[in-house]
Length: 222
Image (cartoon, helix red, strand yellow):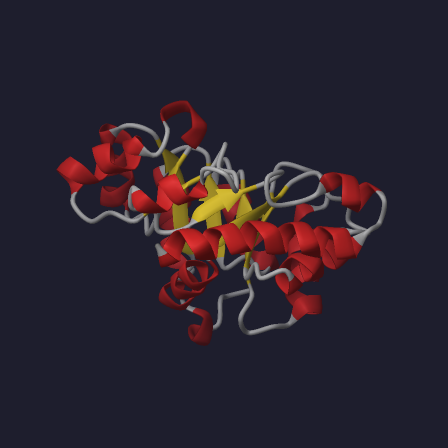
């Protein structure tokens, strides 16, 4: 399935920026993926990343994309490790592809389908390699290893590159990442209440997301 011209990578990027946070949805069953996605969206999250390294990832992406059917929501795939997986998740409806590493073939595949590519980087060499391959946004991962100051360390020699820190970003430190120049942030358990999911408490999922989104909004208004 080709991405609609109306949902091109620039539009997807704009929606990620507006949301301010990408929810990294890992380990959520096929039965609960849509209710959880809906609860996160109701909590203020418009960018949903479903990890590709688990069973039924294609079906989950397709189901969330189909059932939410909201023009403000963008559904992507995370933990994409190779070009074949990128092709698969794009075919299922993913409008952005996130990987923990730099793989030129993944980036080329995304560009061929007009899908936003966000490879994971840590060093300037990795960042330059990703940008030269055509990446759109750099995922700084794992962010907790290097902290917010690493964003500036990358931006210094590379200019105004777009960076989304992921891995260790929480409500109590998100302001530091935005102050350092983050475009948005990626978050998993800090944003998604897995205890509430286990209890089938979608109100709890929504409220937990609302709390994180409020922290993001406060950080960006400073």
